[in-house]
Image (cartoon, rainbow, N blue to C red; front, side, top):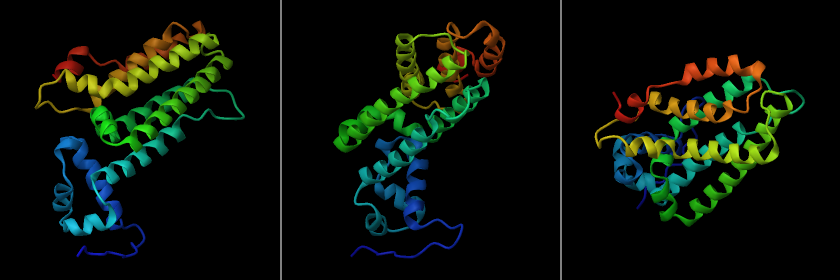
Amino acid sequence: MAEQTTETPASGALSTRQRIVQAALELFNQDGERQVTTNHIAAHLSISPGNLYYHFRNKQAIVLELFSDYEQVIDQLLQRPTGRVLTMADKAFLLESLLTALWHYRFLHRDLQHLLAADPELAQRYQALARRCLANAQGIYQGFADADILRIDAARIEALALNSWVVLSAWVPFVCSMQSAKAELTPVMLRRAIYQVLMLEREYTAPHWRTELDTLLEKYQVPLAEVLLGC
């Protein structure tokens, strides 16, 4: 019989369910979702498999929980501020926040096609998230156009939003595909993704903002050899 844990966590403490989600994220990021079983997660936490199954019926349920967390983070990030004009500081904050989310949930991007093929519900939710991201990204780019940071029309905004999404969402599997099997993904390798997005935007940046943009480009530039070879 499964061990039924119904404890209420003390203030500041994690419940068993939260600990399972946290441990799964750590192991998925470290070893890849396909290499991690529910038994691995239970052993990592020093709990019985039955205790884990009381909270999650299978590994896919844990993945869905993690995707829900990721989805919430991304939806919150890609909201155009209201009641004020966008600034270059907004761009820097957004890119840093996206970089943090990409790193924190990197297993989702590394194993994306496998995860979507294994779970139709996850596939539907991911597709809905992608559509929202593209629509919200267009709204943010329009905000930068309204602030005269970007000089760009609606058709190019749509293309830029799509190109930026492709770069960011495909960056982790791209880097992993260029590494040896034993190579370890690092945050530095992801910084180059931000550089690539900024380069896409540069041609549309108003002349009086080019200096600030070039400062951001310098900040995020990582030698390609370091990204592809991990050296």
